[in-house]
Image 1 (cartoon, protein in one colour):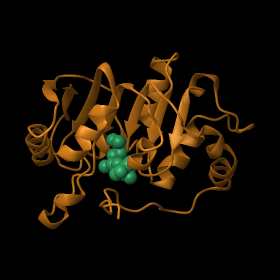
Image 2 (image 1 turned 180 degrees about the vertical axis):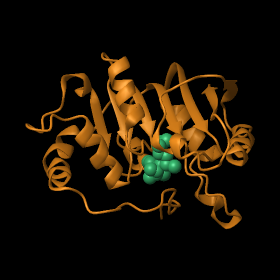
Image 3 (image 1 turned 90 degrees about the vertical axis):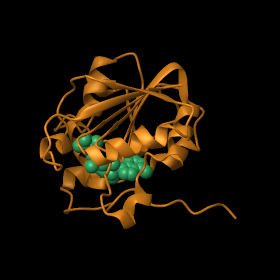
Image 4 (image 1 turned 60 degrees about the horizontal axis):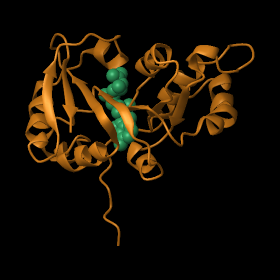
Length: 206
Ligand SMILES: C[S@@+](CC[C@H](N)C(=O)[O-])C[C@H]1O[C@@H](n2cnc3c(N)ncnc32)[C@H](O)[C@@H]1O
């Protein structure tokens, strides 16, 4: 029997969606189902950084994975024209997987140039630690989906999780560089839940 995977995310549904958001989920989302992509963002939240990636890499297909449907709805609203509900030209290269990224990875043989994970849920309580997404096992899985010279870019402002990731990397085929990069503020960076200053970034390469 296949090993049951531990759930790494919290709730899938939040406050009631607007009529426009529900319509976008019913009608548009199925047309944006990903198959292959060049850049993957895991746990995109409200999708600010997915949109940034789409605009700055117009020739690449950007895949965002997020099981929180209100986040998916926010991204759909932001990439569409309010009147026609059509995807705006600058976002036509976005595909959305509205569920656990691990299920998506099983469906694709994509090799990504970049895989982004911004502010992964820290699961700070000791009994929840096993829910952390960026375990050595998952990082090794991601490594298999990297193009030659591909990079996994992780940002967090939760220093304990940051150190834990560095520890996990020791049991992978990846090497880590601590990077000083600046990107657009995502919702969670804005919330700055850990009360620290700027996030720290790790770039992982095979
Ligand atoms: C703390 S939020 C950060 C959201 C966003 N990246 C930001 O910076 O605002 C972490 C997100 O990761 C998502 N997540 C957790 N496990 C996931 C998984 N297995 N696949 C895809 N997304 C996941 C959660 O649903 C949540 O929205």
